[in-house]
Length: 117
Image (cartoon, rainbow, N blue to C red; front, top):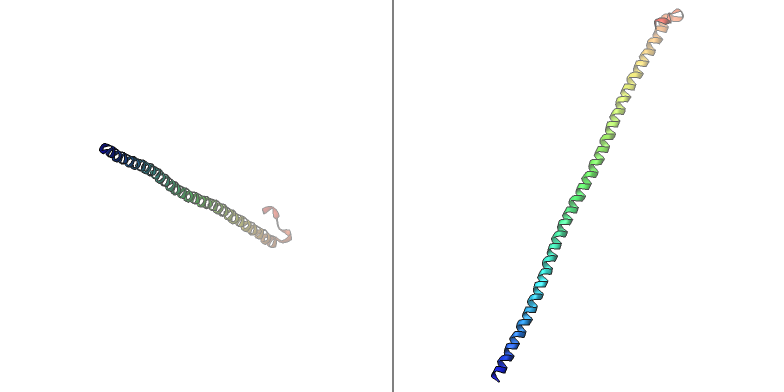
């Protein structure tokens, strides 16, 4: 009878131990899942950081392209102003030349020699 009671006690201890082992294994599985989840979150945060950097870079590229477009427009405008100034110089020269021709007409009158012009 005594050995039967010892056997039952041992069996109870064994069952408790087995239950504790099951709990331990479930805990380890849970920890593994937690570590995987934590790793995934770290990867997600790194991905978000990379996306933020990418978006900032894309914004900077957009600003750079707009700046280049503005510089191109500025250079075209500067070229147009230069052409306008040259045109004004030509017009001024033409008016001066016309003014000289008129003044010679007045000087020479009707009998003036136009071949000198």
